[in-house]
Amino acid sequence: MRTSFFSALELLYAQDRDVVVMTADLGYKLFDPFKEIDAERFYNMGVAEANMIGVAAGLALCGKKVYCYSICPFLVMRPFEQIRIDVAYHDLDVKLVAVGGGLAYGLEGITHHGLEDIALMRSLPNMTVVVPADPKEAASFARLSYNHRGPMYVRLCHTNEPSIHEDEPEIKIGKATVLLEGTDVALLAVGRMVYSAMQAASILGSNGITASVINMHTIKPLDMDTIEKCCAGHDAIFTIEEHSIVGGLGSAVAEVISERGYQGIFKRFGVDRTRKYVGCADYLREKHGLNPEAIAENIKAILRERRQDGN
Amino acid sequence: MIIPMRRPEGAAAREVEEKELREYLVNIAREVRWDIVRMIGLAGSGHPGGSLSCADILVCLYFHKMNHDPKRPDWRHRDRFVLSKGHAAPALYAVLARSGYFDRDELWKLRRLGSMLQGHPDRLKTPGVEISTGSLGQGLAAAVGMALGLRMEGNPARVYALIGDGESQEGGIWEAAMLASHQRLDNLTAILDNNGLQIDGRCCDVVGLGDVPAKWRAFGWEVLEVDGHDVLDICSALDEAEGFQRPCMIVAHTVKGKGVSFMENNVDFHGKAPTPEEMEKALKEIEGS
Image (cartoon, each protein chain N blue to C red):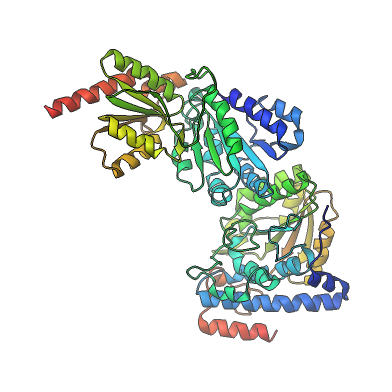
């Protein structure tokens, strides 16, 4: 996912002399092509993320389109105030590209897990928040971010993500993609969890439950229309994200459907930050119930429970 | 390429003898101090101490050194000024108004509902403010970014940033300092308003900064030291700073609350407005100076 995003960005970097790319000393070898194209517009800012964002704001005020790269927590949480004031408040053309959103850096430990980033970024004015679901989408978002003016947060996973698209999809910022249409439940997923949602839908299907699967690649601005359609057409809505259950996609959807008086079942699946596990990304996903089997089982259990209550 | 033009006032000022230049700048500084005290007094809140300590520096920048045009705040070739110590906003507002960025009557609406002048500088509200500041330690990095951006496009404009000594306890200042010298930003001049006091007392008692000039030298900057209330001293340092191949820090030794006897070196006036009586007393003292 990371490689496909930056391969697409590389072409834009070669074409447009106003594009500047910065890293806070991460992405070993990833940026070699950028240095070869034009070393004057690529900066390794050293291990100083807050400074990177402040400098990016200064460059944007001189008319540059600046891409800042680091691992999710270091890019988003360390310099949050610089992002909040320098970038978001002034509505500057700075793109924050995070790698390792969610549990991707599993074995590195909790310092490297990106679990509160969506909550933080979606709270900021002017900030657009997008999460590609697979490598093809990541390439699309490289181009979309370039054509978008203003601050944007692009949350990437890392490598070896399963593909949901064979070709690069038609994506529109702010317009969720309906991947499957079912009538019983709606699964609203984001990032790598879109693939898991598709698999969970298939398991549910073999149990006689038909599921819609919606790729909520844009968290902000949130696609209200699609969420409203989900409310109208399904008795149960589930959100699935590799993020803390506090403040992410689930919270964003809950805000919308509760204000609109949705009466059906609603449940958020995500990471419970009070549970502290150690292990690789796949192990952690499983422990947090984010593998397709666990998602399907949990949905079945919730539906069963409600049916019993109804009786 | 457009050759940057000096403002007529600045050009005229430069042509006169040093004595006249001093008189010209000192007079403006006196008026600026009067404005600072009155606007904070009328607002009933604000930071007089650190505004008065940097008044002479700002006057030298806006009325002598910087190429800027109040009619065109977005002029590409303007020199940029970043007030990293954003709580000194009244000093910036006073020089911006006197330069012609907005009507001087706006000053008396400082901190009022709907005013273009809020407690700390706001780029989106006030013409002439390059970037919103007030969260200490952030401005210098943005100034470094501007200097990089200008150099990248071959723009001859310079960037000036004013930081505080209390502010220098922020790590962000030193991250930016390290990068500026690594990038050899010869179009960047920073000025330290070294007034020695912060909210809770003397900087050396809170968290001492140690040998400040040595620290900046160790970070790879050229360092000049000036009396921050001697306008000719400030101007000549600003001139000299342009001649280096790397960024320059001008350590300006200043007095907090300078120009009002009962505010000078008085930590109480870091963030407290004068009462109406104190304001009248202070204004009279400034008028008589």
